Image (cartoon, rainbow over all chains, first blue to last red; front, side, top):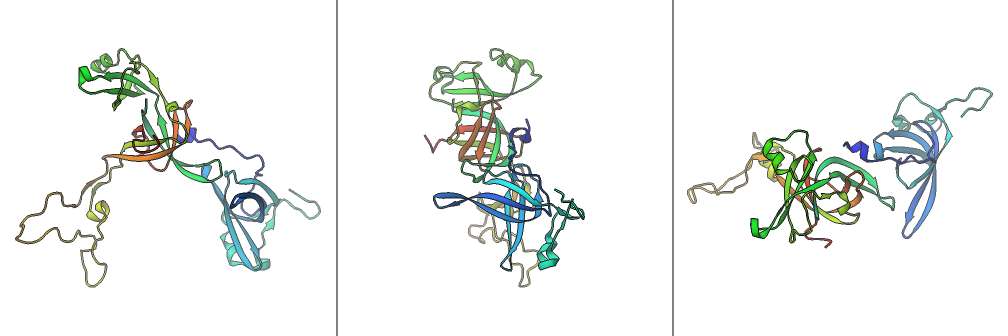
Amino acid sequence: MRIDDVVEIQPNPNIADFGPGDTVRVHAKVVEGERERTQVLEGTVIRVRQAGVGSTFTLRRVTHGVGVERTFLLHSPRVEKVEVMRAGKVRRANLYYLRDRIGKAARVKERGRTTNQQGA
Amino acid sequence: MDALIGRKLGMTQTFLSDGRVEAVSVLEAGPCWVTQTRTAERDGYTAVQLGFGQVRRLNRPERGHLRTVGVDLRHLREFRVDDVSAFQVGQKVGAEIFAPGDYVDVVGISRGRGFQGGVKRHGFRGGPKTHGQSDRHRAPGSIGATTTPGKVMKGLRMAGHMGARRVTVRNLQVVESNPDRGVLLVRGGVPGAPNTLVLIRRASKKGR
């Protein structure tokens, strides 16, 4: 018996297939004291770490001139839903270079969109 | 039965019902068979001998010992119990004896680290890194006084073989018990490398 045969990953049907460069909206459960509510965060995926149940992805967005990054556990029950808002076209897996860029330079090209038609 | 023989499969993470993440050890727990009972009249103490791990080939003494069990087993271990009358040779036990929330003690053989110095083996601080020191960075320091007592005290901690000894970790909480697969998920770490034998007992000091 191997450990990978024992630990099962239940894929969450509400999590869309996404990758680095995509702009996604994450519905995450947040526990505040006694209450639990759903928080929606949107940002660019700058990193996806594949590690079985411990897989994570990191969102980055700039709000009020401050860069904010948040890492989520992909298979956590606290991640309710992930929607892809915009598919990005990038040439590397970890988009750390975005941290050094501000404003227009920090954009990611959109994938699958041609001049006239809208893609994914 | 309050104990099992098993195998450490390794570590992973799991999500608790409230969404928190817990580091867990995955243990193959049983199935074990009762291979022998020890009674006060015959053996002077009471215990149950359990067997674990099916094996293809046994030598004749081993086969003779397990003849009444009906299963060829590789590992045999005894566990002390107060009353043997509830156990019969050939009886099967598995992960179903532990439920989530139970506390267990896990015994294993720790990973062997070979010959290690005092810094790693006993947490010595070593010597200063600077102020003209040479060759003293990981030295053990003084090992005793001078003419009185004129010897090094017995049991003084020094460099030597580290690891590969029997280690018990107490009071590990069972996070998940899956009797169908014979698997226990236990909170925290367990001694030994993956695929090594472990003994799992109901905790002796907690949760009784």
